[in-house]
Image 1 (cartoon, rainbow, N blue to C red):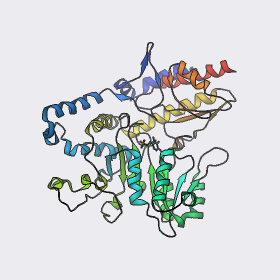
Image 2 (tube, rainbow, N blue to C red):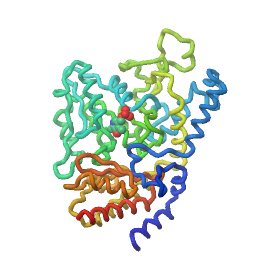
Image 3 (cartoon, helix red, strand yellow):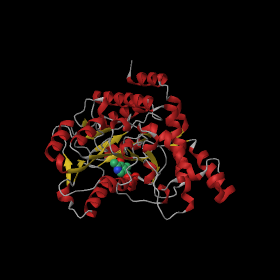
Image 4 (tube, rainbow, N blue to C red):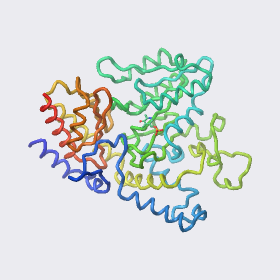
Length: 420
Ligand SMILES: *Cc1c(COP(=O)(O)O)cnc(C)c1O
């Protein structure tokens, strides 16, 4: 069977195939484009507009009364998101809250979980951490009067493959563990696409008495997560990448149950963290809610929450287990096809082992320049370019097909052949 036939057969056997029709794809005169940027901005579900229009309608009809009279009353709108979001990340409902945006939540979590002492004051991060995370972390360090140069420890990659192995994490913790206050790791490295083992790293960090948090920007809605059982202290993630909730939409935050009643943790607070039963009595005395809800600051924006509700519903319908299975099958198919291109320029940066990758595949074009990416664009493929020589693609199980993956491979192959 040819690879094209194989892709057609895989699509026919795919039980999630029908979800693809429930999204808007960007298009040009020739039709829909091939979209592989779900790791950057997820596509718009067709039902999202209905959810947003409902809120605009309720606002026009009820105005202030919409807080209680809207079809989905605004005062507790975020609660509609809690259960489906908790399912996506494998948490208990009271461990999860949707609020703010990702970097804001990261700051709030560091306020609570980075409490540098005299001896234990360092933060351990992965190499090539996302810039925003790094800026946030360094500013927190300075906020405590410390110097990032001395306080930030960076996990180094293996020399031969750019990954951070669990042995590396273990050795680093053995060396610095007693000085590390907080370990902060992305679940999938945005550059290599390596997925770190949350249970293993969490266990190691806790063995050395460190607090540990994960940035799940590239993990939520992508990996099969089990935050409650794995037990990190906190996690944060955005919803506009794999969670298809629209540009700049709200973010998620997880605080493990063991901290649910710990009101002594330092934290920045606002009225939305106050006991919701009598929030509107406007008492001067703050009475924090238990669990993740107690970290809320503000009356949240309903329109992006409506986008999120529409999208999370699709995740509930599809199920994370099924999505993860299809995602692995898509990326495995892509990797196999790429490996069959006998071209010295191509190097797959992403781990071949299923457990060590998410939906993203990073392809390094050694000695190549951006022209290959531009040619892909001319072939109507939307991918992502990282200087100096990496193309990132994310076959997303909710809306990408095996035929999409075949088309990507086939186009890349002819471009490389033309370029010699
Ligand atoms: C996408 C991403 C961000 C973006 O942060 P925002 O606050 O949503 O702008 C931060 N960190 C990581 C790891 C990301 O992948």
